[in-house]
Length: 273
Image (tube, rainbow, N blue to C red; front, side):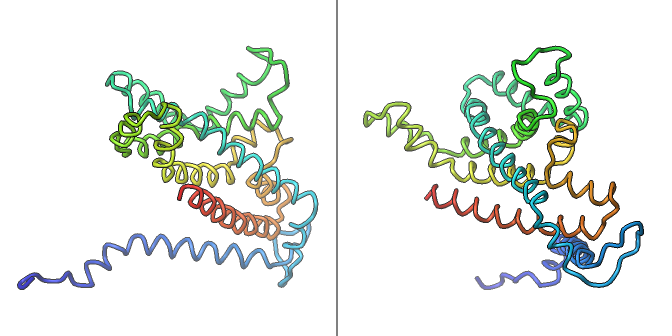
């Protein structure tokens, strides 16, 4: 249209400047990480040697591969359980007719965000231990106990993402399916769930990525017996002072995380089509 001025490039660049600055800082940090991963570790010294690939070959040792595998299994199990447990709550939060019920569910969902991760983890240590409840199986310092803590910490985020996706589903489609004789179960599987797949994909990716890098939950609930990637990186860097080995393990974990997230996103996206 005549008289409409196109925005100049300078204001647009200024709007992107903070994001570009953050990306530049992350790029420099990642560059330093990968550079440090190729330096030789000298036992008993904080100084590093010349260039070497020993750090990456050490990551392929069976011991470290087991830690990576345990992390993948715990992250996948946490994602699935958090999704299954969060969907009914998110559905009630998005579809409840009572405003008081929606407010109550929202408050209960947001309440864990106001408590630090360390405090919540110590609370789970008391619950999963034998101080108050005698469990038929041992949960504290076991993978099952770590899984319980990870699912609990992941559910608020998953609930909010799913509730946003469910609230955007037009109920007209569900009423149309019901008018054609579809049962509530069939309506859910054939109409509601497919339409909320973008939220399922987003929530699963966020929870999986967060769990893959979780540190305080496996560190405290695992008691040193259950180790995930972040715990191994900490042990190499702060306990063994093997900074090059820690950097190499972190670099491998980063690449593996990006690869798994890409595969998970593609699988969920293909299934949702």
